[in-house]
Structure formats: C-alpha cells, structure tokens
Image (tube, rainbow, N blue to C red; front, side, top):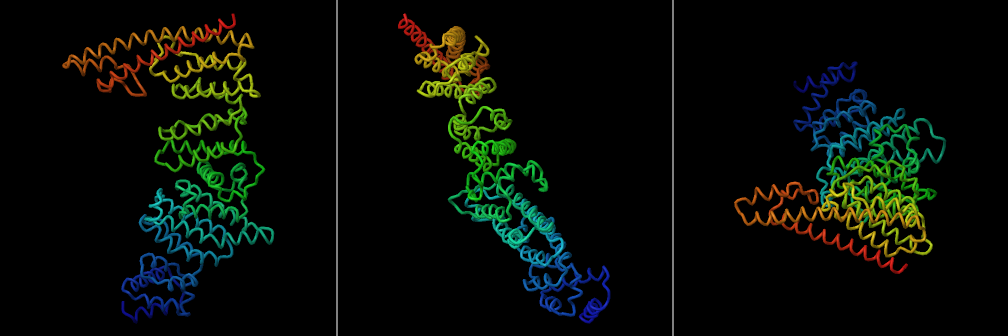
Length: 571
C-alpha cells in the first residue's frame, strides 16, 4: 500500500461512519509504522485535531502499543486523553491478561499511570472500574515469587516490590476521594462502593504478598513500607480494625473465600499486634484475654496452612510471633478454664519438627498464663491424649512446679494440693501397658514421675492435713512402684539377654549382620529402629537401657527410704 492510498483511507475514516474492518486496518497500519521506525508519523496523526473523533472511538491503539516497545510516552499520553475512557480501560485490562511471567512487572509499571488517568476521567461507575482494575493487577502480581531474604528484596529480580509500591501510589487519589467524602458530607452509594473496593484491595494485599513476606521492624524494606501503606490506607478510609478482626461476620460485602479472608485478617493481626503498625489507632477497650481468644482462630488457620506446605517458613514465624505476643500481654495465672473449651485452643494441627521445636517455648508461655483450674484441666487432657513420652514428661515437670508454687503462702488451692491433685497423680503414676510397658520408650515420663513422687513425699506437710487425700496418694504410689519394679525386672532381663547375645555375635564375624538385626528388630528408640543401627550403636543403646533401669531402681529405693523416714518421725 503506497502513501497516497494510506492518505485516502485516513480521509475516509475522518468523514464516514466506521466499520469493523476499519479498526482492524488502523491497527495494521499503526503496527507497521512502529515496526518500521515511523513512530513520528503515528504521533503526528494522533495530534491532528481532525482525527480526534475517530481516535475517541478507536480502542485498537493499545493493542499496537502492546507490541510496540518504542511507542513514546507522549503518544500514550495523547491517546489516553483522546479515547473514550471505558473502551480504553477495557483495552488496557485485556493487555494484562495472560502476560508472560517475565514481563508482568514491566507491563504493569508501564500501564499504571495511564490506568490511573483513565479512571480519574470516569464519572459513573468509577468505583466498580477501580475495583476491577486493582483486582486484575493483583491477580497478575500474585504470579510473581515473594522475596524471602533481604538480598532478594534489594535485587527485586521479578519487580514485585516496585509494583507493590506503584500500586499504593496508583490507589492514592481514590483514597483521597473517600477521605474527602467522609469529612464533608454523607456518603453516596458510589462513595461507599469505592470504599469497599479499596478495602478489598487492602485485604488481598495482606494475604499476598504480605502474608508470605519476611517483615522486620528494624529494616525498612520495600515490602515493610508496603505493609505500612496498606495499614495506613485502612485507617484513611475509616475502616474500623476491631470490626475486621473480631466481628468479620458483619462484613458480608467482601467477596473473598472464607479461608483467604481469614488469612488476610491473620496478617492484619500480626502487623497490628506484633509489628505495632498503626497500633495507636486501635481502641484500648478490648481485654488482652479477648484479643488472645480472637487471635487463636488466626493462629490455628496459619498452622493448618503451614502443616500442608512446610515451605512457608515466614508463616511459621508469623504464627509463633502472634501467639507469643498475644500471650505476653496476658497476666500470669489469669486465663480461665472456659477458654480451653474453645476448639482453637486444643485442635491446633500437628506440625513438622522445626515448628514443634520453635513451639516449645510458646507452649510454656501458654501454660504460665493459665489459672490453677485451667492448668489442671490442660495437664489432665495432655496426659490422657498426647501419647508422647516427651510431652508427658514436660507436663509432669510443670505439675511439680505448680505443686511447689501452691505450697507458698497465699497460693494454696485444691487443684494442686487437695482432692483434685489426686486425679492428676493417677495419670502421672500410671503404666498404660502394665508390666509390658516399653520402659526405654517411656523413659522420660517414668523418670519425671519418680522425681515428682520423691518431691511430693519430701514436701508432704500440706497433703497430710487431708487424711483421705494422703491415704489415696499412698495407695496409688504403692501400686505404681510395685508394677514398675516388675516392669524393670522384665525389661532388665530382656535387654541383658540381648546385650549378651550381641556381644557373642560380635565375636563371630560371619554371623554378625544377620544375628544382630534379628536380635533387636523390635526395639525402637526415638522413633528409630535399633535394628537399623550399626552393631556398635546397638551395643551403646542396650547398655544405656540397663543404666536407665538402674537409675529408675535407685529412685524407687530413695522414695521408699523417704517414706520410711517420714513414718519413723511420725511414730
């Protein structure tokens, strides 16, 4: 097509009604100009006032721009001012769909200023358009990986940090509109809709990327600054934080999946109560116990998510930080037993080893906050249901601490000194499998049980004041020690024979592997089969077991000596 033919077509576009093929032809010609380096020709065409009517009805331009990286900013600006805003917005949002991951940040950063200009030109339906634009952009940004380390944030290889900052700048004029409305007059339906769309934007931002980000107060990283902007936006649009956190059922117009909405609120709670962002805007009327109770729902939700995907390291940190900070604000020995009836307080899912290790400290803080009755109920439940010798030994150690605390002046209570204490001791001084109990696997619990019993007998003054309680404790003690002696005797005989056989087999090199595996195949230590260990390690395990049995027996002897000494004093 020569120059004269092109001019003839353009003249017809300006004068006549446009047909669908005319728009396609403009797209073809525009793309050809840009690809051949004739962008000035296209710019001259756009600047010509005679073409304004045609351009105002033509939304093909942004399809040209999408494939024309050399298109100038001036050309984009002119076209944004000229085209019909609704059609132009549709065209720009279509460009964002299906972007190659490597071009997401570049495309969004290029479009954001022009999207903002188009939206500001709208009168009717602005709120809905702002909402659909923010949603479309966040959908694409959610495809980008979240940087976890300081180095990754600084590098910002995929542009997520830059795009997040640009999004808050993009939303700023619309936030200002809501602020002006709240300050001057009653809000219209359109104003309320704009506020809701901005709220949705904030909640989506809290869930991604902020929930997955590693935020540190002492290092003002790009994502930290983004978190601050989101929290400031919530305050600016006059969204009550207590309503979002504690009374979310009233917010039925936030169209989010329930789990996603809960995760967004979990991040909100973390930023507010742990990082203290905008904490000055939070009313001080809520008790620390109430806040803890509400936050437990979010803690349970985050642990559930982490249990499914253990690569979410930041969420593990957020979870324990939120739980710890919520507990720290509560006074020691003050949490009532009624809180233990809440599902979130006892059905937190089992998580992996790394989380369990970090959780032990939080576990102790939680115990410290319970009052005497709540501690008693919690200890009883854990002893009945944990089926884990390590946890049971930890609980028994805490029972001893509470017994000692109750002995001090002014701290006496029936839960750890009176009749209720006996129900705990029945669970402590108990061998579930009787004489067949695996003492090596239950070693931690048995040793703590004997230490507790020894301590109780030494500090027996308070318990002896109640004759029924003391007699029942003595009866439980006698039954337990009798059964434990039998169990130790059987276990010692078994392990001694295994050790003797292992030593004999080690002398016979030819039979070493087969015989050693056969002998100890049923023994398990710390969730590891002894049969999988080398003969040298097997020897150490069996020898250690015999030493442990000697320690148990020495404690039994000492308990009996204390009992006899006490009887002699009384007589």
